[in-house]
Each structure stands twice: as C-alpha cells, then as structure tokens.
Amino acid sequence: MDNQLQTMLKENFGIVFKNVSLLEQAFTHSSYVNEHRNLNLADNERLEFLGDAVLELLVSRYLYRQYPDLPEGKLTKMRASIVREESLAAFAKECRFDAAIKLGKGEENSGGRTRPSLLCDLFEAFLGALYLDQDLETVKAFIQKVIFPKVAAGAFSHEMDYKTRLQEVLQKGGDVHIDYRLVKEEGPAHERIFWTEVYCDNRLIGKGQGKSKKLAEQAAANNALEKLAE
Image 1 (tube, helix red, strand yellow):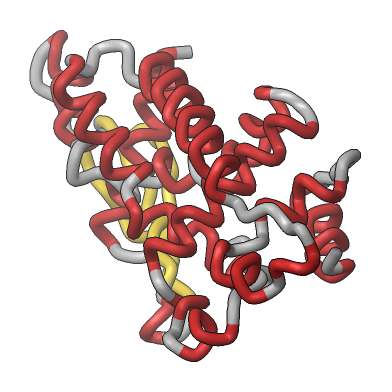
Image 2 (cartoon, rainbow, N blue to C red; image 1 turned 180 degrees about the vertical axis):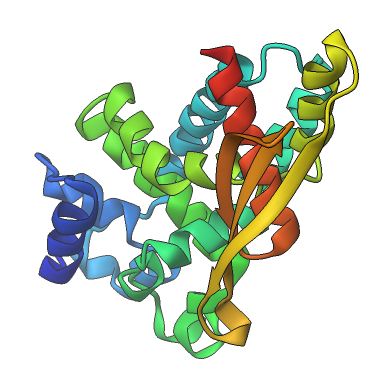
C-alpha cells in the first residue's frame, strides 16, 4: 500500500485505516486489476457503489438540516450540483487522491489520472471504504472538512441565493439598509480570495470569503443567516 497516501490521510484528515486492504482496493482501478490478474486484486467499483449511497445520505441530511425553509425541489437541485461528477472529481484532486490511484498502463497513457469520471468514482470508492472500515460519523467528519465548507461558502449558490434570503429575513419587520463591504483581497490573479462583511443598518452581522466578490458576499450572507438562526 502507498505509505504516502496513508501519511497524507493521517496528517490532513486524521484518518487511519484499520483494514489497509480496503484503502488499497478503493485506489485500485479495474484497468490495473486487468493487467495484474495474477495478483488476485479487487477493483474499486463495488466500493464506489456503496460510497455513492453514503455520500448522498450525508449530503441530504446536511442540506435538510442546514436549510429548513428550502423546498424539496431546491434541495434536490442543490444536492445534485454537489454530488455531480465534476464536483466530486474536483474534491478528489483537492485531496490529492489523483496521485495515488493505481491505473493500468493503457488507462494511464490515455489520461485516466485526470479524467473526471474516474476521479469521481475514486472519491466515492474512498468514502465507501472509509464507511466499511469505520462508520458513518467518520465519513461525515471527512466530508465536513472537504465538502460542507464549500457549500456554506456559496460554491453552489446558483441553487441557493443567500443574499435574497437574508434580505427577506431582515425586512420582515420593515425596511432596513443592507450593505456588503469588501474588506480584503489576497493572492495572485488566478487564485484571488476576497473577504466581505455584511452590515444591517451599519451593524456587522456576518463575514465571508470566496474566490470572487459574488461568492464572498453569498458566504457573508449565509454566515449572517446562521447567526440569526442561533
């Protein structure tokens, strides 16, 4: 098993597998198994099946609790945008899973290591392995670090307009002045991070950050909504 992967999981996420063979299976693509039949290896397809169900349950539970006023249709669309192929492939890359997957030579040479569908399957297989090795709460703790902060920061805000919701909540008792103020921006042009604060009648009610001014404002609005709900 790749010791670098185990070290990375421990250092970055506090995860230590009890059954390392499950972790190895999660990172073994069918193309590698086909080229090494003498090793009697198992590929990650069954783990992917399980991980897909575990992920959908945890994301559904998170959205249901986080957005109590959101109708079923909106919740469904938001969940779909979070668990779609492109999103999960991006999460796999951010976790550096792409460097650890075992691929057959043909798959490797054809660019499999960067293929979104393969990375999506890998991410789900890892979740399935983690669930079997430990429990649902351990998987939840992992995706709380990897996925949920991006949801809260407005990365999927095309399905959730926090600014509109905040305005509706604040103006229930009459007109108020809502003001979003950009307080800081850092980083190179291609990786800029923006920090925004939102004020209601000159009173600070929320803070947020994002990769664009729009996402930072959405994050600040969401932060304000969370505080108001406390």
